[in-house]
Length: 334
Ligand SMILES: [Zn+2]
Ligand SMILES: [Zn+2]
Image (cartoon, rainbow, N blue to C red):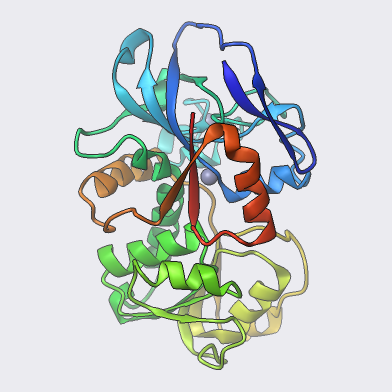
């Protein structure tokens, strides 16, 4: 099969790779679409110790199953493979399973990713998609589930309904846009601000969601102004802004993790009872609900997805790296 292989820091090679072998309890997927994720970019920059070259990256994937229980079904894969037995897996919090493995990683276990013509996954990770959901669009189920989960975490901790809250979303990438879409179109949030230094991205996002779109230095983002801040960036500077602009008693939802450490205003966090919530991935239930949300067009049309050919994937990575790309999500087609 052909695959786009991560062969070194900032290097991707489109080349011939061995086909995956058929194993019991696993389905082989003929990939129709696979999205480029922020975490793939992190690996591409050589900053992910769980993704070491050579490796096929990619985990946001849809297509048709060639064998086994789901043969000939059109499906999307839940890339998070978990043990099914631990206290988390048996209580609906599978994403916290200590033995979890993600597609497109090779440490501690090898699981080749989706930037290829074929990929295998355990049958428990295969989800059939309804007819009204376009197979190519279904590739965004994973980032949509991440965003839905983050919004639900905020909703569960908020003393007010989300529709009454003033909310800041930092970052207009796919997760920022998807959080804003879920907040606005499903949770009826009316007072949304989205910030990003990249004007191209803000302009693109403004076509799909009702919000104020500003540079992070805009005075619209002022001290003690927001009930909830979604940090989809995860830089020290974005966290410092989040804690500064969140209201007393407010909530910070931390989804981005570009810089895992740094200074933080613990004084304000303590004296003003700020709730800081780290959020990661999604539960299996969130993933199922996401497929329904996408199929019913609950978050609107998905024309913000840009499609490119897999064989030109290296240039897509380069453009995302250079910041010259306005699309919040690029999906590669083999
Ligand atoms: Zn992803
Ligand atoms: Zn488990």
